[in-house]
Length: 78
Image 1 (cartoon, one colour):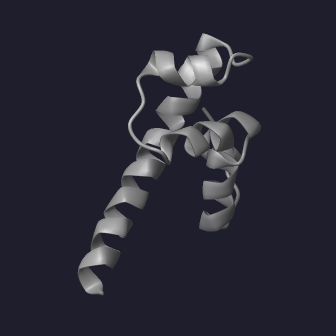
Image 2 (spheres, helix red, strand yellow; image 1 turned 120 degrees about the vertical axis):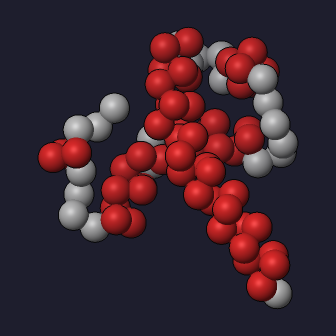
């Protein structure tokens, strides 16, 4: 986890730093097709360690929640 003092000033840059790693982008790719169990994600990314997958999912959870909420609000507005 990144410490608050090490985060960029720009909120967009902060978000990119949280989801911009190789593994996080590949995890997001896999999650775009629907809900996946931990084992399914691990199987689709054979070179990722269990520790990295767990840590990546923990830091991405709040980002994905906000994206989900934005998507719901957008759909309601159109």
